[in-house]
Image (cartoon, rainbow, N blue to C red; front, side):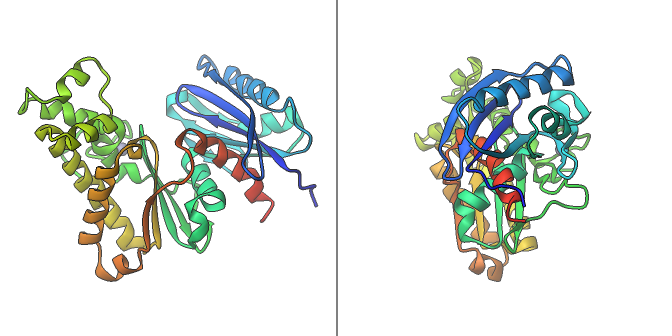
Length: 319
Ligand SMILES: [Zn+2]
């Protein structure tokens, strides 16, 4: 049996930055560091990940392993990142490279599956056997937990909820399809809706933020709360689109809880309220009755990625 050490090195590879930290079993973070991602080659990125891990490891005593959360399609069994579009990676052996370099076990997973593992071990998911973790930020994805276990799918691709088709004649999506949910209600999708709404409401308070390139979903929701008609419409239409998507998930999977994470749910109280009302009004009655909780993640947004990456290591010991 492998020794159970009290720390894991967590590496969170986002769209622009790599972050790393040493994470203890009781979630104390130390040795936190970050770098801008070098996208010139997969080798450059691997070396940066190793440098971040080395920095995080500086004060460590006993480390159980390295957990890596990254965007894209990841084969968790081999630790190979099969494809990560925005990092330009294809078939990159992230796990084997770090294992060679550090001589300890490495667990690699896609960012949302890692975040779901974090919820399951440390977050709101501890209280439920069946739940959906829904992440809405620059993209949209879901982590599905049945009977206390993350459902990964045949090729570890489960959870691509953002590419649910909601409008066959809708906007083109980078995945090659049209009218994906992600194009409408991800953070950038909500901003795009706001931009279209200005044609009808040129005096909207959203205009100034759009022109300065600073409009975010939470700003839209704040302006809706202040009574701006166009922002109110964007917020309620977003709640309907995303709500319909969640209704489908709830009817299909019958979860006890829906846990919301990601930037779009930060400072979004009114939006979340509308969303829950929509789901409870439109999902099948029995499924709604067993939906005990509709809540935001209790993990801090900026730490959730690192906590998820560390949870991959600690969860592995329980298998
Ligand atoms: Zn798509």
